[in-house]
Image (cartoon, rainbow, N blue to C red; front, side):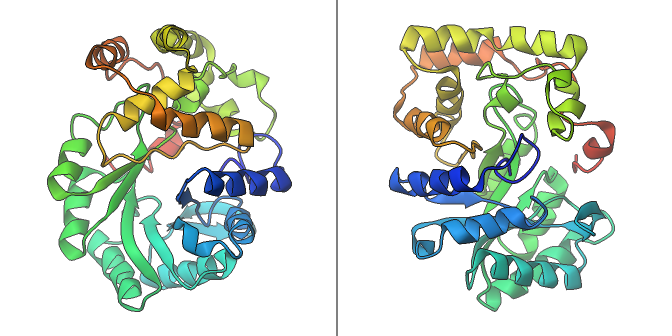
Amino acid sequence: MGMSQSYGVPNDEESIATIHRALDLGVTFLDTAEVYGPYINEELVGRALKGRRDRVVIATKFGFRIENGKNVGLNSRPEHIREAVEGSLRRLGTEYIDLLYQHRVDPTVPIEEVVGTMADLVRQGKVRYLGLSEAGENTIRRAHAVHPISALQSEYSLWERNLEERIIPVVRELGIGLVPFSPLGRGFLTGTAKRAEEYAEGDTRRGDPRYQGANYDANMRAASTVHELAAAKGATPGQIALAWLLHKGDDMVPIPGTKRRSYLEENVAAAALRLSAAEMATLDSALPPGTVAGPRYPEHLMALIDR
């Protein structure tokens, strides 16, 4: 997402070089969505993977109504799903999507109807596996009863542990993998987060409650233990945050987003970092669920999360 919207000025040349470097380092899972841009991130990924398609698992998402280049609401009606998938296939330059997610649960369309349509696309060979994003436990169970759900994508990190009480037990019971987005705590775990007003107009972080006022101060303090452990182990704070997730189980595949090769290489190196049981316990106790100050999104976006 960050390569094409939301975070600073896009640089397609560096973004494509970053994707190519990721493949060279053994990264095999790339995540995009039709709404990123909209559309232009899928096109970017398609250009980057030309001649390299067989080296990666491509995940993309549908679920928003896009008009005049703007996201104007939810849409998971069957006819829209089919149209969205055709558009994604074309932009990505591929004959099939490895993992297709519903981006946000649409309360106006029964999840059984949504997943039934997605399952038809599997039978047609246009999609291989199905996923949900930010879905609640009831929706997950209903969806999985129609067709196996392979992955749930939701925000989860050492900094944001909202999934632990209700969602993670359900996906593990059903054998569904978890794909945590924002695994670096939106910059708070790496120490790079700035106050909301320091970001440029158009940057989504300007409207993020967690970057604002007293919330920002509290969240920076909360991440201090991560920085202390990183210094002790000769690692970066971001590597500690990713290692914590990777140590939580083989069913978790975090997707740290970056636009630059230097950060990519730092992120990939986290896979080799080992944390002891005592270090994991220290991190768990330092940032327990509910530590973070402020909601994850502004109110109108929080309303789209199925909980």
